[in-house]
Image (tube, rainbow, N blue to C red; front, side, top):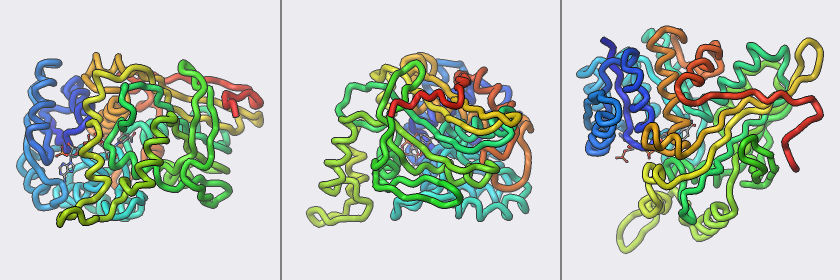
Length: 404
Ligand code: NDP
């Protein structure tokens, strides 16, 4: 029987762990470990009630390679699924190298003291993964993750040449709070308050935060303001999609979210450097996280849908071709199935599928890989089976669903 170790016990972990339990013939014994063991126990209890599967739990500080190695040597997993925070990517990768165990994550490494995420330090571990004979799968969430697989599917099965890609992330869910984030607030706010960036003709073009706005008419949702952001899959896709001329990323934000974010930024609450308060050192964004609703608590109150996908333009048989490949996910349906809202669901399900690809040998190799480097078809088939069905909207070259 195989053994799977999952690290982190937040909203994404709850979904990934539940989905692994629902696919127990692949994942075998499942151990859930995190900094706060009681959160693992709460998830395990709910999974037992929901699926009958028993999940073992453990405490681990994933900032410590030694603690991770000790745990991995004790439970002997085939794979470690990292759904803690991006700050822990490198320590968990290093522990996997030492113990020769496959690795998967959903977000690329970021240092807590610098709001900048990039693949450099994770890609730099490629040789060590090769020497250890293990596979490291980076960014197996929805975006990054499924969006990379959609692009790979287009390259491998739909187009002869891809010229432009626009990745669209629309969350039309309503949780009823004036301001809350749908995944870890610290990571979310660092991402959206940063400068925007897109890639065109081999160069990165930087924009002010939220400088470029477009309105896309999202299928099954309707028109929504969408803002250009830098997002991590742009870094790998601009390298791996051959012949690409431009790639951009857009995310929807409501006016209330933007007003709150601007205000918090203006008063310094998004700061990541320590400040002194009554003789104590505090990091403003960490304090803000304490005040904001826990994303995991949004599940029972969120209504509405997400629509995430990729608009791809290029050539097929010498003719111009344009498609939108996308998934629509309903917050309330997700809550019914696994007790979590759609943002956790759309991340946790692909984390499970990526691990399934590795454990069943469908995706194999030694070294560190991004999602688009594998055959997209088996992953796309699993999306349909595991709760994230996708659709392809064929557009004529002049037809568009962008309003502005
Ligand atoms: P949460 O904050 O809800 O959960 C993070 C978990 O990691 C918590 O249980 C936390 O423990 C644990 N953790 C943090 N530090 C450590 C540590 N040093 N040792 C052990 N455990 C630790 O985050 P989410 O579930 O919302 O997000 C999880 C990941 O998913 C993030 O990396 C996020 O960026 C990524 N993500 C990816 C998306 C994609 O589409 N690719 C979309 C959304 C999220 P504690 O409970 O003690 O705080």
